[in-house]
Length: 228
Figure (cartoon, one colour):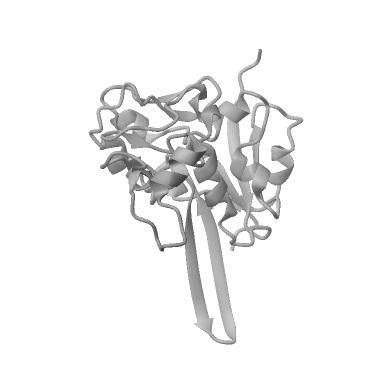
């Protein structure tokens, strides 16, 4: 089977700034409270009623010349055969060298034991269940636990290591789009194979597009089309 070269396009004129991609990413990948693999840059300018709101989803750029891979001393950050920049939790020593080298600020560090919130036994009010009661009722480590994330990566990462977007490699392996793409209500996002001339990603890249901090030479593979 021919190797693929995955890349993402995000149409900023279609994006409505709902942050649904961030929410669905959290559900799909079991990320901890306050931990996100899908980030965003937002900016408001002007004075009411002439106000302009700008919103740009950001995530791991799966760079062809990824500085996080070069910085990692134990090869926990690596390139797979399909061009994805992935992370091996079992190799990670939590040195944060990848975080220091990433110019996009999209790698997180698990300082504490993940999902401690769901062990709390104090309720918000007398009418609500405690987080632990909810967890016990559902019967999983976290109520939104997704076992599919355990495809080739720790389903829930542990304290003392880093983590980041894997571009839903477990879904791409089944020829499915990442969950953020699938659930985007305005269909602003798409992941395609740059090696396939028939893939519609080439149609999207015919539009005016840019990448973040391209001047640094990281060769990012998240392309923003029709950008502001």
